[in-house]
Image (cartoon, rainbow, N blue to C red; front, side, top):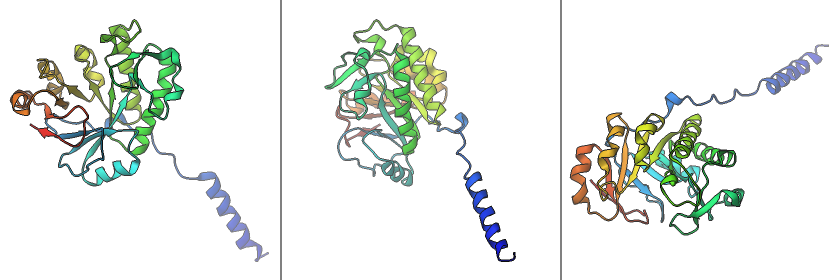
Amino acid sequence: MRRLLPLLAGLLLLATACTTGPEPDPKPSPEDRWRPKPGLAWQWQLSGRLDPTVDVPVYDIDGFDHPASTVQDLHARGRKVICYLSTGAWEDFRPDAARFPKSVLGKGNGWEGERWLDIRRTDVLEPLMAKRLDMCRDKGFDAVEPDNMDGYRNRTGFPLTAADQLRYNRLIARLAHDRGLAVGLKNDLDQIPQLLPDFDFAVNEQCAEYDECGRLAPFVAAGKAVFHVEYELEARDFCPQARKLGLSSMQKRYELGVWRKPC
């Protein structure tokens, strides 16, 4: 009998270990997500070999092109990292491109291999975008930059309305927040008054060239960063206004490589 006691004790411990197991990770709290403040310097690199040595607190990089190890390396260097995704347009070079039915693909958006999406079809797009945001979360990104979020103002091939765009943009923001990710409003200046509560920061291209930077003031007034680039203007021509407005501004080239000229 004494010989059986250690065996029985061991079996009991094994059964306990098998039934209890590790506790599941708690669902991320919306209050715990990153909330970038105005004035943060940033680097936006979507092409070429990533240079992780730019001395800025924020990096914005392609979510598909970089593994979790890249995000971890940037974190180790003290950076917050934004996951760039196209959520309003289809790209034929992405690994999930075949999952998008032809019925949701519209006209080209001006970039090779890209077509606008029918954002009214949330029954199709929501699960696809959820998987993309899962990827950003699983790689350790802090935030997401969803691109092509103003299709209703373009010739998409679909009769999109402002209401359609608001509904879709809020959907993307909710999906990001559900995963503990901050989310930025990309361009879409006309809908800033309605969408300001839903987004944690803004990303803008060329507001100075088109004399529109003042329209981003509500983000800064709300304590939310505005990450801004110009391509055609020289930094000396837009930086004084950008600094006055509290924007995080720099000059970049269209290919969004390493080169930058910050304000």
